[in-house]
Amino acid sequence: MAVAELEESQLAELNAMGPEALLSWALETHGDRAAIITSFQDTGCVMIDMMSKVAPGLRVLTVDTLRLHDETYAHMDAMEARYGTIERFTPDPARLKKMVAQHGEYLFFDSKPKQEYCCTIRKTEPNQRALETVDVWFTGLRRDHSSFRVDTPKVQYVDRDGRQILKVAPLVDWNQAKIDAYMAEHDVPKNALYNQGYTSIGCVICSTPTLPHEDKRAGRWRWFNALDDDGKECGIHIGGSGI
Ligand code: SF4
Image (cartoon, rainbow, N blue to C red; front, side, top):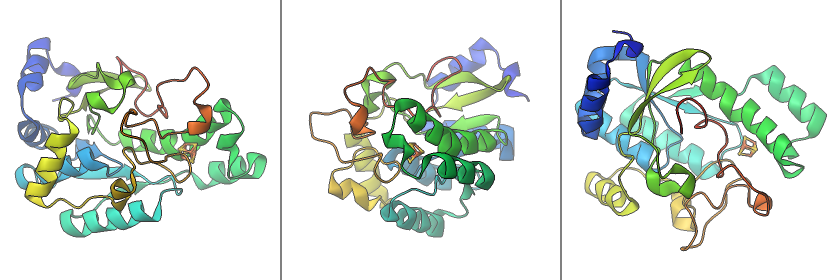
């Protein structure tokens, strides 16, 4: 069944389902056209652990920007050892080489457009390639990540290059305490950067630790804090019918 054939009533049913039921439904109905796409932050890791119990075999995809922290690479390896194969999507080598030759490795410091260009080459374009392989996209978005994400739906269609994809955020209404409790109970591996004050983890330099009063994504691109910004989003979760 194509995702676009789902009726409003079926979407409402999906919205009412818990995370394990959603993962199980996706594998049963869409097989290898359904996947978790994750950067292995806490929420994604909880989803993967749930998947291993109720929907083993559901694909797990990630975008490796080639600028991640050593701790993140170690964590990904630990997750792969425990839960199985991770499909890694990396930047197109020719486009990456051209960008670095023209603007340098650290172009993201120069201006907002150059940061967005870097995010396009390293994140958004590989993510788009990953999305081309799925009809159901599980994401670890949560409403408490930032003020920009407070209205994130649990289930929605998003348009990617004229194609409708069902984007599912099964833990959208969980908070950090609930995530922490699940991880402790199920002994889910955790990125060591969380113990260094990070609350949102992306590329080296572009993500930094946060203070207790800040949004979880406040540590992203701090040198742009004086600008009117886009909610500290890199582009992967912008577009379609919302976040
Ligand atoms: S987060 Fe920084 S290094 Fe990573 S893709 Fe975006 S601008 Fe480039």
